[in-house]
Image (cartoon, rainbow, N blue to C red; front, side):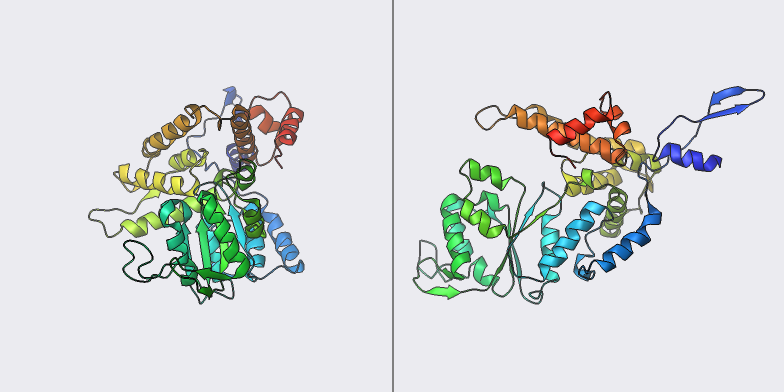
Length: 387
């Protein structure tokens, strides 16, 4: 029974443990080890959830989505929606913070679609110089402009019959948004320097870390193109909101790091100590999966032995924490700065983090962020639209 109390006090219900004896009286019990900060709840409900899933007429599990590591309910809902939309050729818009795995989800949708045997072409819209966007996407004929020594196929043609993934679609210049809209409406492209339309059959999956709705309000994105792209919208949550996924992600990334590094001279297989893993689990990870992976790589680099200790993990966190703080405290003032938006971002972050760490217990979450009662927390959740 004592072991049960230790597990509960070190995981789901953090508490101070006490012990009593006739000669020592009542004293605080010292537990000389840490237990992973992440606890897998509700194991007994998994069978019921599986039965509910099977009886709901949902699409069967697709192997294409097996690379997306998850067990949280929020990601499960995303995967189910993605499986539904994969079978169709409708455009998909994937929203989410940087590093949440938008391209990974897009590739899974393509692999689970009838277009899986054709090309998947991924393009970062923000990485192409504005003067080359039209040529890159639509192609050009020989002699169309200075330097065009031969004809070139554009991204739309290259993806014909398959999927064109438009990463950071919000970075697309406004003049090109008009031309993109016409391509999507007509199903054909015209190369630069030509007047002959070329029919195409392309499935569009777009992604953005920005709020396109806000960009529409500010005039940076065309509403007609938005509604053309946003037939199916999938919103990827940041990893700080994926309760239950962090342990799986960390284990998978450590396997990846060991696999990538095993051929390096003198490399030793690395594993995280419990205390180091607890430090990793307690971070908010504004850079999401990408930041987490690089931090684990640094931890493995700093570690001299086979086990990554807490000191190695803390040293690996220094760079990401300082950059995150500078980003928060030193944002440029001006017409695009909004103090209310910044306050809302902070409030939502810490409320969601408290709820995640307390497994949805509002009373404990309220105490963690300094609220007097769970009702105050509930009011703030309603204010900022947090479920």
